[in-house]
Image (cartoon, rainbow, N blue to C red; front, side, top):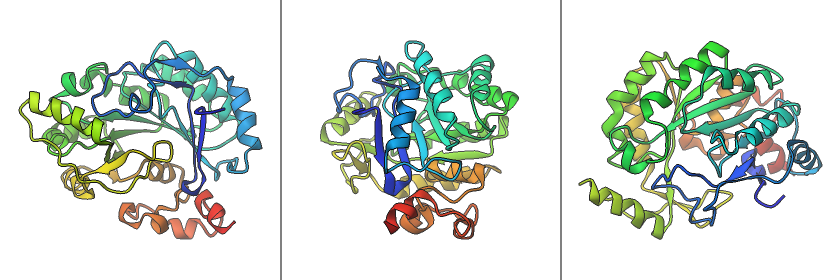
Amino acid sequence: MENTIVFAERAGRAFVNPAQGCASRCQFCYLEELGMTTLMPSPLSGDAVKRALLQASQFIPGRHGTLISLSPDAEAFDNRVLAKTLEFISSLSTLGNPMQIATRRRIDRALIREVVNALQYPTQLTLFVSSCTITYHRVIEPGTTVPAKRFETFEACQHEGLPCCLYLKPVLPHITIQDVASYIDVINRYNLQYCCVGILYANDALLRQINRILRQIGQQEIAPVWGKPTLPFASSLYQVGSNEDLFELETALKATACTIHRTSSCVVANILNIPSTQATWIHFPALCIQCQDCAKLARNCLPPALVFHER
């Protein structure tokens, strides 16, 4: 099960990988730093992973249970691993747990419909469509779908009833903010209800790679200001910059009617009207936007992060 399932029980999450590796060649990506240079589907079946989750003491099944974050270490909708991704979604959906998955590809209606048909309830899985730049996409995200085509996924989700979110992650200091007018246009054009901004993680080598690209396109380099290591599956990677980079973008995006979140698990909680699985309002108050009364919701059912905190 190594690398297929990674638990972060105190964050109320299980990271589950139908595959590992990616061909998108994003310049900020940490996968190569973790040794994941080849795209390979998991050798495990979806049902085997489901059984492993149920046997794990770190996992809480059900709608109010552990948030399953699918495919953090791969592009889940790459054609070479798509069948495995769909297999995992179909198997794990029977647990009833909330799920999330992110992509930098364009997903058409037929595929969205296949995902929806595999779910136990319509809002069980949230699809995050990721972007960190539009202007410099070809340099910074060279192997991904062109943003304008990628964003058409929102229309497909809306037609098929799948919850979706514009995922501006990682926010690259001085870069992502340059496209804020375009992102506002995307939010308004597709009438998006949810957007989430996320900070950049890197180590020394990865930051040098990013800055080399920024120099090539005549942009300001990112200062090596490190935060705390918070990625449960990559403790060697640190937050780069400060939350101020996020808040600047967030403030600009508030010109729309969209709810701007600071963590993806809160998007899922907001959609499902359940308390944040990681108890954001307690453990990460700087990231809590008070989109709902999670403390009140938690009186009926403790979120996983608080369940494990009390053990």
